[in-house]
Length: 402
Image 1 (cartoon, rainbow, N blue to C red):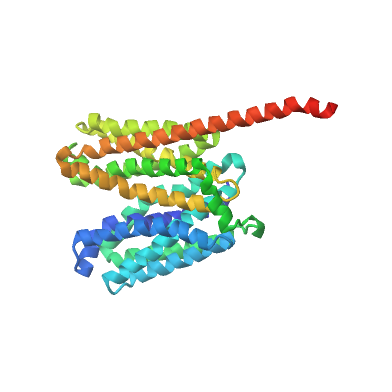
Image 2 (cartoon, rainbow, N blue to C red):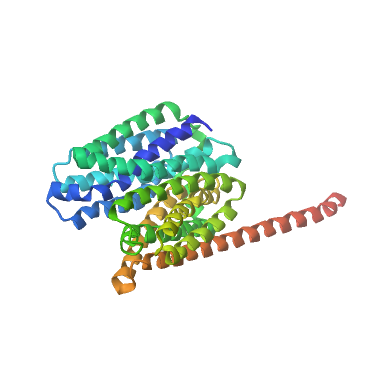
């Protein structure tokens, strides 16, 4: 695989770390600005909103700009945003900085996925995207815990400065190692928008949103489940979440390999596994050893589908995949917000800490349904193409004899 793919993976590690590290720094941020912990938590919600809006918007604005130049520009914005956050004199300035980094974050994911796919032959696209997205899973395993450690021992500003340095390293790597793409390969906004006329694009986006809503419905409330239902000590939560992260990394690697062999098969099987793991929590949550195994498998199933989700939406946007790729990143983040909200409603209604896994299973099941509708649409398209080919073959003798 080209070294440029690993440069993209390093960049995604930086982006993923800044996205998730706020959760581990909420007490320090709240104390630093004199706000409540829930108010500090708005930094997470605001970031998600910035990604949802910024990813497609920035992609449209840069539709005619070469992709490498766009990636470089986005990383400059990212570094500036992280630096502004590190030096923020007020909570309001920090919120502005988070929006800046969110806009660059979402657009980089969408455009970077297209660049990654263009670096390899057709049969290796999903694996290329898996390498890039692997940086996100490594961020959950190492980047977020390390960022929390730095923030707790050296202050929250040090964490933002550290990520800014990572961003600078990524900027140098992208500037020097990502190859330029010919100008002729840059479609205009009209071509990018035309991809949304394909119903299968909307099915793919719905599958992404619902699957991520199912995942994050359960994952957001996994700590109270482990403590209050499985009765693990609080000190065990961090290692167990790291175990989930290891599983997610393995799932990403396997998902890329399997998706190149059978994309929709990988997606549908992965969604069946995800639904099954979420339902399994109800059985294993009361047994420590069983819960450890379930959590690891949950990590594998959760990220097994990601390369297929991103590749699917790009495949259905032939000739103009950049905007739909960025829109898929928005779909990821809509799911990230929707799932925890629905799970929170379940807990608030008195259903307990197993409610998020039931709600997550229902959402994953809905994602499976949209994926199966997509499979059916593929089959109808192939049958129509075969019928058209056969009709053309039958008409050839009549044409030649006239």
